[in-house]
Image (cartoon, protein in one colour):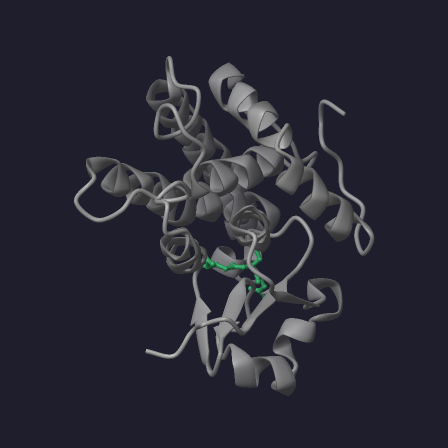
Length: 222
Ligand SMILES: N[C@@H](CCC(=O)N[C@@H](CS)C(=O)NCC(=O)O)C(=O)O
């Protein structure tokens, strides 16, 4: 198997790609960053579509192959960490817990927030349908918050005692929940504490500083 050392990361600041950005920085292997500007729809540019036909970030090119989907990329990065610290190794039950978290972020929390930020993705151009999708998004997000709060009860990190790629994902989704476009969201003290712990990590502060050079965004407690 060739050594997979040639990593190119495609991202946009504070998009879901931030979870991957954090994981890459935590991993500590060299990688090249390429910003894909979602504001100018660079993600629809033929040159980017040739890399990722889905036209979304994140994407990670590993030598000649491109991997998409946050959960898959986080799994890949976690497995490159041979100490098993970023993602528990096969056979360790915590690995499945990590997937439980990551899939919940991707298939539930992300989609609920999307239905609030960009209801037209689901409702098309119809105004009434858009406001209905938005309202349902708030209800769904509130339900997801209670799931996250319950699962984080008495935990330092998502998997218990150690930071993992699941925490990077929870951090980004927490930031999204603080966005002013979300009219109402229940208090979420466990999630907030976890996000604050993630923020304390030097790799996270490095990544956010880099991303903010292209698009400034708030860290709510800063
Ligand atoms: N299921 C994908 C979703 C990726 C996604 O929706 N990325 C957003 C940024 S958070 C994006 O690139 N949106 C651009 C678009 O869809 O036009 C994942 O989890 O990676």
